[in-house]
Image (cartoon, rainbow, N blue to C red; front, top):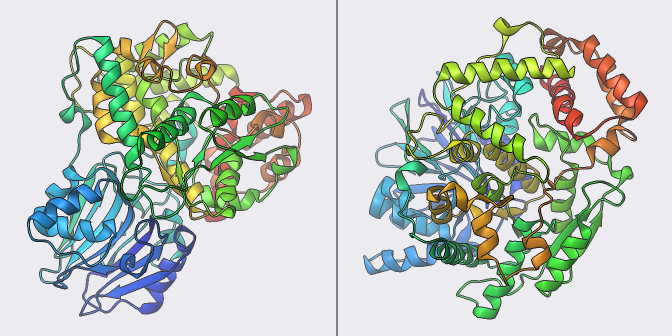
Length: 612
């Protein structure tokens, strides 16, 4: 796990050492354990790398790394969890290894299988491989876009990095804001990350499941992974389906416990994180495998005393089941303004809430020298966990709307119009203009995948949330906020084998008898606390935003809205927004609904004040 960067001067002139050094320093937080820089023979290409040593933390894992014959050079961010199995296969074909790192396994796999290696990897990655003989550059991102890869292309150069702000601050590109994207973000905060567009006009995103070639100054992009093309046959009976889910999940957790440094987990007390830590404990009892970290008993719990989203009692129960003594981090009113500007800078995008809790808990891991966390991301979007107690009818209405929207671009546009009208009725729509001025939808990955004809609205909705909208946004947030402290996040629920299997299951395996994640809950019977396994209450891992906006953030929001930001005023009815926020603050009536609708405007104004 690291930060990667690169510059290719397309006119053949030498890359300035100061340029690649500056670009690499801008991602130093992602890899605080060392810097590596490499130049091609003619110096028209340069790679930069910041190291977070997880596998083979000695000298053997340093990057940029050259193949044994010197032909290929790689920079790589991520983990290939099945690297031991791939290494044995490659050794049987004659490969000789000099290190114990998974990076060297990728190089050998590239020389043996080229692009086909991607289908053999079980992991998360963003990588770039340069061929010093042909002068070609290959870049690729993992199936679901867990690890980021941003780039910019001009007549003079091709530049890539692990974060968009590194490109924006590098001095190598025009860092102007794409106002069309900004408008789209304010209508739909989950409608951007699945596209190739970003908030910066000249920065593009290599989408999850895509790879790219830079040949002779021209870029070609190909989608190498479609989940729907890899759906397996599922067992005939529910009991067999549950058994298979359990096998896959347990193996996914076991693979992600491979580490040469201590590992842990962020434990919320909800089903997902509790299932992870309880399965980690079960794996140790069954017998640890090669390269598994014996130092895994580290659980970090964010608690919110007095707030509506505090789950400390459940987290304590899960930790006790796994025989782990948790580390608690109390987050309260005093933390509303703690490092607020730095947190927004590390987020470097627009979201529906202030992610202080996430940022603070990963800082706590780093302070305890735990640099790997196995977390529960992906389970909600995989198995329909947005059904909350008392909201069954709304849940099925959303599924029906998704079924309709999946039929054509015109239908999706209709959903946008309905969204705008609903927000206007609620008094929380502040974009200038009317229906004709609605921001265009951006093409999203997997949006037009041809799904099985027998799928209903729930399966269609989950497929889109997982690949196109909600989950890509969440993955972006957790990558940036964890790597701000040099912490790697691993996600067992996003093992590709588990994902394709669960996607293939019928809807009754996901939502049944008033429960979501039905197959996972059944699979974890007797393997975790029953009170958590069967809990219907759904609480997201969020900062206590209503309490903060009704209290300590009130002055900050007032000051922010009073600042003149011309680019923001072009987009938003600033006066109406100020009036709405003032009423909510004065009456102390901020709630989760109003936070989700209005915070993106505040977040956007902060971003535009910095960049526009």
